[in-house]
Image (cartoon, rainbow, N blue to C red; front, top):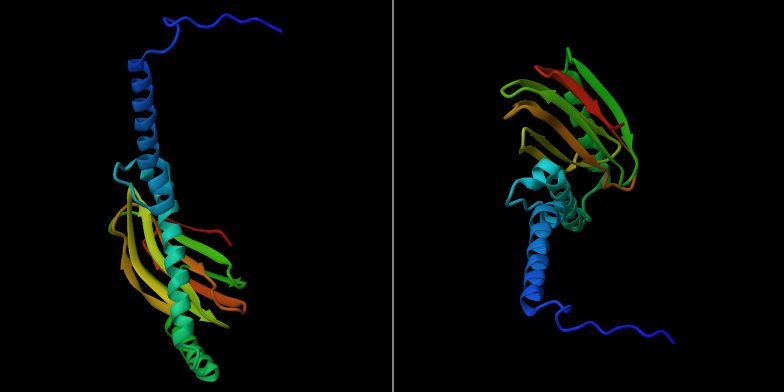
Length: 207
């Protein structure tokens, strides 16, 4: 048996010190909640620290994916009675129309997405720069989010659900990266062709 001396009353923390420690712990928890948890999980960034740390975009992507999943379920229920033959014909017609209109593209990328796979393509642009694009989807449909981020800002230019293609022109609202995030929600492989031209500095992709 070992004998140990019991602490005296003077050695025990005072009530004031316990209260102070509790308050400090609560404040620390609130700070972590506001600067880390809310931006990373929900895209809510009241202080702006989450955007600087790159956490807010993570939360925004999580929210977007959750919305996509819910919208996909609704879309699948609504389209369950549609003819797959008609969908295929319309998709082929749109793809051919886009292909015939495009010309003189500065950059072109073609990639295949397996079911549930994702991909990104971004243009590095200065504020006010303009670019044109054509997106052709073959073999199925994709969900996409055409957005920009940089300089502590973000913007959404276009969103698509069950898309077979899109084309147009846009102007960068700020210095940063502007482009697409795709997800294949179909049950088959999908091929995507993205064509761009304009006043961008560089292009980036993860495929």
